[in-house]
Length: 154
Image (cartoon, rainbow, N blue to C red; front, side, top):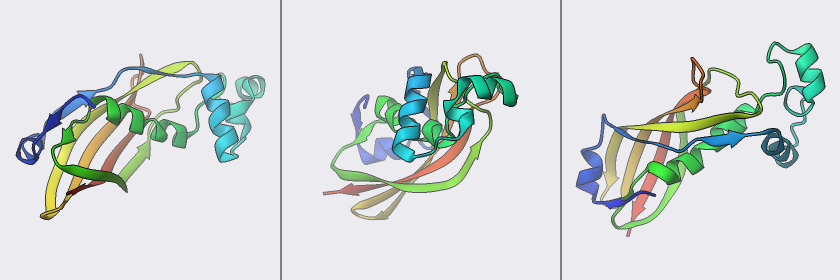
């Protein structure tokens, strides 16, 4: 995380871009590891020769859920911590679209805009962050999402 800020300062960030992560490589080794963990071995992800022959992608592509899961590391790089936070939890998504495939060997990064910061109780804040996962050199993003999080205060 880049810095720690107060609740009021965090609320003032609504409507602004909070930050952009570093680029992260999505190579075949990462795709294969994700396939092992999730037991999703569809050939478009794990068989470069067949994917080159039988798909319009020219080779393997990352699982959509792999691209989605990288949002966590992107968030750690750019989202500020809020003073007094006891814990934060993933609350899900209101919107999620996989726009473009991430080809093996591509680099991706996350772009974060805070859309909402609502205090649901004195000790609980709901945040909604618009996230775009960009593909280096791509015309379209890998995905766009409205990511919900709950922040619990001591």
